[in-house]
Image 1 (tube, helix red, strand yellow):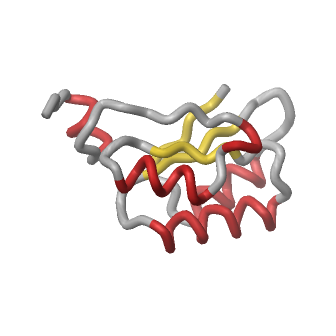
Image 2: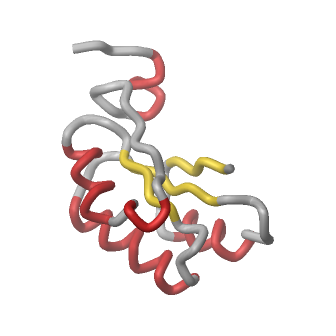
Length: 95
């Protein structure tokens, strides 16, 4: 197994981070990547606030491994970021 300082920092077994590919980034995919040892990433920019909350909760039900959320900063995202943090997102990537 390849173990790197990134693995240690993120709490993952493999130095693989799934791209947060818009609508293809669903809780099932994110959890599958995390359960396999990588870091699943949930795209939340185009989800409503309620959908964001629900998607994070569903992902947490599918995995006990770390996963992250991705937010595009082209628009104000304060409320969406607050929801991600309230729901316990361990990693937040920004684009």
